[in-house]
Image (cartoon, rainbow, N blue to C red; front, side, top):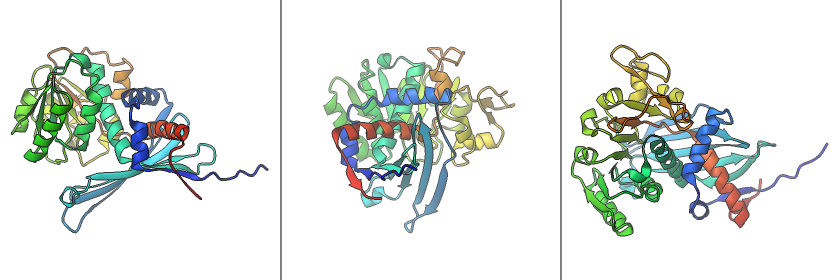
Length: 343
């Protein structure tokens, strides 16, 4: 019997992860992973969720998302508290654990917040690119001006070469003004403004990213202009009228969406008012038009017209965290980054 010597576990701190992620082709990685899911070469298992209320009354949760991509296996642990902002802390933090595919022992532990934000934005932009010409988008709105808005903007900017206007809205007006000043300085050819009301921001944009922390739906169908695309990244910005009335509705994984009773689309599914891709639409409701793996593979047969309203409502798939983390681990190893931890 061959005796294997256990290698040390590599820990990649946030600075290591940030160094490696600079220049990482996240959108393409996400796109390839979605196609791998469709081909049965990547996948995930149900997530585990622990939720509680903090002593200050804020909602907190810890999620564990296992997944695999190719020969990479692992899980993401991502925690968040809505009370962190008042403490001067980021809302979310987490770790990603990669496992050795042969021994199943932990191989690498890395700070996960940046990877989580990057893969989330990568999914959004890959999905938008499947239905719209990114280079031709001229006006974009962001509802929410936190970390997710920053990362979405960073991935979008080099692809949306025709971008000429960005409209920002945040319940915290000072945060919106600060983001506007920072983004305008980085790309002076783009006009960046702040809208006092979310309706104003959405109605002016061809593409809207909702990246807030709200749990109350509020964006109505008639806010979105003809030809507009609304990406519902956060929990519940899209109201029932928008989810049921848009011309095309896409999700990343219907099973995940349907089993979640905390988001409106999952609630509507539980009430029998929304069905999955390929299923008959219920009376007074609708069916989801397609999942993102099929959309990106070109298997969605309905044409997305120039005047159609599109809603992209991703849930968040742990498989993307594993795929991006595996790429980070490979690059970090090539550069000799990380701290070695003994078993």
